[in-house]
Length: 398
Image 1: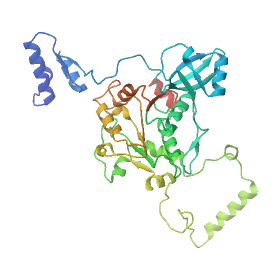
Image 2: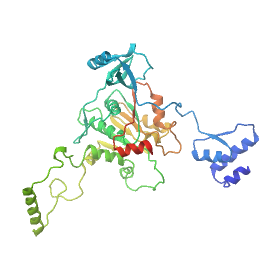
Image 3: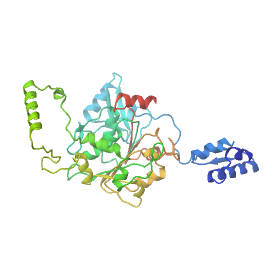
Image 4: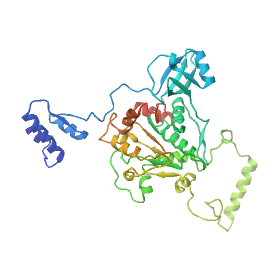
């Protein structure tokens, strides 16, 4: 026990007392003695005093090689042309590893021609069903920028898929595309969903700043700021300028008129008032267009701490940063989803701040592994960053 007192002298702490009990068992019994815990700090302390320690294995997904974002299926040029004309193809005569239901693939000919598809079971792949663009109410059109985003958009817009898991590093478009497709499906009175619900676990990066004041929406706003940013992109305050008119120069004549009008205003004895509400004379802060979506209830903020016991019907539910949750927490959220609703779990398994889960035991990868091949579930992995060249470089190298 002298090893413990030399390294961990304070036995008033529960962690140290647990390690002391394990050391006593080790000294009184034949090896091996292994301390099993999910607390990473306890594991490190135990190893420091010479005690073998490991994590639980029953809640981890199998250790496999790095999963590819999609698989290539070789076809002849004639078969690929037949798929393009008919919209489906039977893979019965094509060899290769078996596919999971709703798995996304890329059909490729020897000549280099490709076509994306989805596996529908019974050896049949079908063409993706995605529009040219999706648009939020009063917003700007959003298009898929790469092949993986086409897969993601197809799964987001398919009513037969009720649960979708998505892996993706920073900047791959997980938040923006899922929000855009959700709002696209809630635009009219005949839409399948009554609105969009957004939530994410409140696990801080680094040191916590303490409790936040205000209402539930005000407390959750810092955590859901990425979705406010996405809504600002989808429903901007100012319409984007047309590229051909962005650099248009003002003529000298018009410039002179503006200059004289400016001097007239400056010399006028009456102060000029600017209305923030479309010229109705009322003053106050301008309401951003996307904030009307929040106030109308079309977009709702959900707190996971109060979700137990609820029944969420006819909502498009996005659970962000799902890799921070345990499998039990993810199960609690998914079992709240009622008939007519859809849930999308997005996150990056390589960015985990929760000390009680890792890349193999977090709720996102656990959910994908257990639901793989189910008819109601689909999975997409995004690898190509579209935010900026700098963001993609940092996500790959840092």
